[in-house]
Length: 90
Image 1 (cartoon, rainbow, N blue to C red):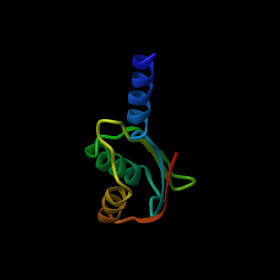
Image 2 (cartoon, helix red, strand yellow; image 1 turned 90 degrees about the vertical axis):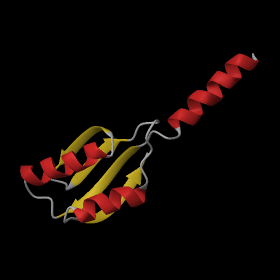
Image 3 (cartoon, helix red, strand yellow; image 1 turned 45 degrees about the vertical axis):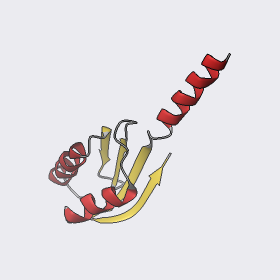
């Protein structure tokens, strides 16, 4: 029983660091914008990057081995020449 509880706690602690992140990005209007942002996010070692140009959203998943702060996301996007409208985590 103790082993099962310990395993459950370990799994919960790892999943606590993995988030689905949605970032609203003003100024992102074309496939070259999407490609540039994707390249920058890949440097942060995030997973499953999806860019929605119509809604100006970038969605990705952080992984438990490399959590990414909101500040790091904002800095990366703003240094790329875009404005952040929101950062949401699930």
